[in-house]
Image 1 (tube, helix red, strand yellow):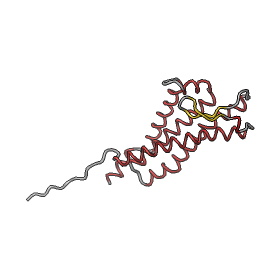
Image 2: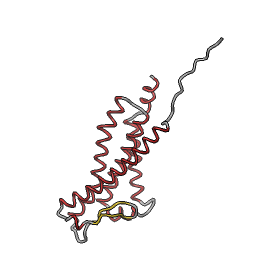
Image 3: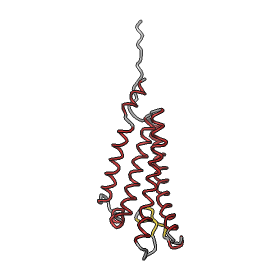
Image 4: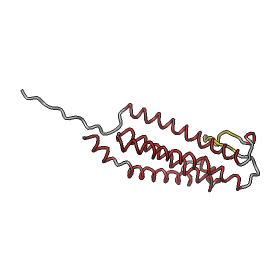
Length: 181
């Protein structure tokens, strides 16, 4: 009687549980980065001498926002505008390199690869937003209400660059080799 040996199946993607973890991680990371972004606007405004009662916290379209009082000098407004996205983006990049990069190097997995990708893409979005908000504030506000505006295209370009960087830093070949061994 001939016995057939089954070769182990090669898993080519994330499982259902991994997708659930990825979705939860994405939601938490988006909410956290938006909260940090807006909180830093408020903190920098307070450091610049604006009283909390003068700030309007609300939404610009569907985007959370902190509206500054009228008549502020550009030297006061500009650092406040830059601070939110740049700070949130730098914190996400630090998390990406300090936590995910080390984790992937020690023990690569498809899930850690995907979670790290999510982190760097959101970091790129935040840095791009911070730059646009600080340097091109009027275009940033217009872009927040318009789909496929130049500011959205600029942000998408930053996110694509982040994906390319991630592919260089986290080679999938290493993942395949480790999973086969």
